[in-house]
Picture 1 (cartoon, chains in turn yellow, cyan):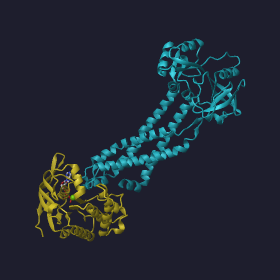
Picture 2 (cartoon, chains in turn red, purple):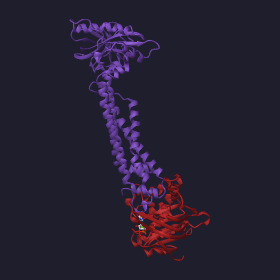
Picture 3 (tube, chains in turn red, brown):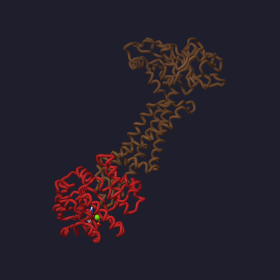
Length: 232
Length: 372
Ligand SMILES: Nc1ncnc2c1ncn2[C@@H]1O[C@H](COP(=O)(O)OP(=O)(O)OP(=O)(O)O)[C@@H](O)[C@H]1O
Ligand SMILES: [Mg+2]
C-alpha cells in the first residue's frame, strides 16, 4: 500500500491554531505521531481536545499552522488546496463524525460517488462497490436510501465509501458514538477486520475506552497535546 | 450520475421548475408570434411589396392612406437623379362585399408590377386586366379566395381574385392589390362625386450604382414636403409599429428578468439545501470545479427540458389565429429565445456557483456547512 514501506502517517511537531475573533484557540500543539502501515491507532480524548483537528490535518482537509505531515511517504504540508483535494480523493478514506452520506443517493451510489468525483473507472468501480457492500453485510441494502437504513447500516455504508478509493490511511472520527454499545462493538470489529485484511492503517477516534482494545495502540489527547502509550 | 440521481429522486421539485420554465417559454414564444403577426398584419403589405423605396407626402406621417402626392410633387420626384423608375401607388380602405358580407378592405393600386405589387404569389397569377386582384391567402376565409369576385360596396365595382400572396395585409384588414387603374375606378365607384384620386405614394427603383438609402437621401433633399423611406423603414417606422414593438420589448425585458430570477433562485435554494452534501463531497476529494460543472449540467438539462416542452406546447398554438392575426411557428425565434434562455439560466446560476466555490471542506468535520 504505502510507498516503500514508509509509515502511513508521520506528523512532526504539528501545531494548529484557529483564529477566533481576537483570541486564538490552540487546538493542537507539538503533536508528533507516527502510524505504521497496517497499524490501527485509537485516538482517545475528551470533547474539544483536538481529535477531529488531528484527523483533518492527517487527512489533508486542514493545513497545519506549523509542523510537517507526511502521509504514505508524501509530504503534504505545503500542498495547495487543489493538490490536497486530489490527495484526499486518491489516498485517504474518511468516516466523519456527523454527515457522511449523500441523502439522495442509495447505499451503492454513495460508494460509487467516490469513483465519479475522480477519474472514472466505471465497471471496476461497480464491481468493487458490490464487493464492499457484500463484505460489510449490506448486500441486500444497495438500493436503499440512507434514510431507510439503520444507524449501524449507515455507518457501514460510510466505511465502504471510505474504502472505495483503496486508501493508504483511513480516518474514523467517532464511528461508534451514535450507536449503542453492542452495535458499536460490531462496527469496531468490522473496522478492524477490514483494515487488517487490506493492510490499511487507520486512526479511530473515540472517547469510549472500551473500544480501544480493537486497536493496536491507543494514543491519548488532552487539550491538544498527545500522550502516547507504547505499542502493544 | 449524481446529477441525474438527484433530479430523479426529487422529481416533483425539478418537475415544477421545468414546468415553470416551459410555461415561460410558451408565453414568450406566443407573445413573440403575436407581435410578429400583429406587425405583419399591419404593415406586411409594405414590407413585402416590390418597390425598394417609397415616397410619401410628409403630412401623411408615414401612413399610406393619409399621404397624398400632388402632380407637382410627383414631377419633382420623377426628375430626381438616381431613380431608374417611378410608379404611382394608391391605397384606400373601402367597404367590400365579399362572401356575402361587407368588410372593410384595403385596396392597393400599383402602376408598375415592380413598384408596389406583392413580391411573390403563393397561388394564381398577377392581375393582367382591370378588375383583377391579388388577395392575401389568409383572407380566403373572408370571401377573398382565389377565383372569387368581390365588389366595392357602394358602386359595385367588381374585382376578381386571380392570385394569392402571403403576409401582405395592411391595417389588419383584408387586402387586395390591383392595377392602378382598377384602384382609381374602385374609388370613383365608391364615391362618384369625387375627383379622380391622387396617388398616395410613389414607388421608386434606384438606378444602377445607387443604393436605396442614397436615393432616399436624394429625394428627402428635394423638398421638405416629401418623405422617402426604404421599404423596410416604411414598414417598421409606420405609425403604431414602433409603439407595438416598444410595448412588446417591455414585456420581453420583463421576461428577461423573470426567467433568470426563477432559475437562479431555484438553484440557489437547492444549493443551499444540499450544502452539507456538497461539503462532504469536497471533503472526500471532489474538486470545486467538478461540483460547479455538475451544477451547470443540471441547469442546462432543466432549462433545456423546459424549453423543449414550452416549444412543444407552442407548436399547436402556432397554427392558430388570434382574431384576424395568424400566428406562425418561427424557427429563428424559437432557436433565438432557446439559446437566450439557456444563457440566462447559466448566468443566473452564478450565485449558486459562487456558493459552491466557497465551500470549505473542513466544514464536513463539524457537521456544519453553508446555510446548514
Ligand atoms: N473551525 C474552528 N474554529 C475555531 N475553533 C475551532 C474550530 N474547530 C475546532 N475548534 C476548537 O478547537 C478545539 C479542538 O476541536 P476539535 O473539534 O478538534 O475537538 P474534538 O476532540 O474533535 O471534540 P469532540 O470530541 O467534541 O468532537 C476546540 O476547542 C474547538 O472549539
Ligand atoms: Mg470531533
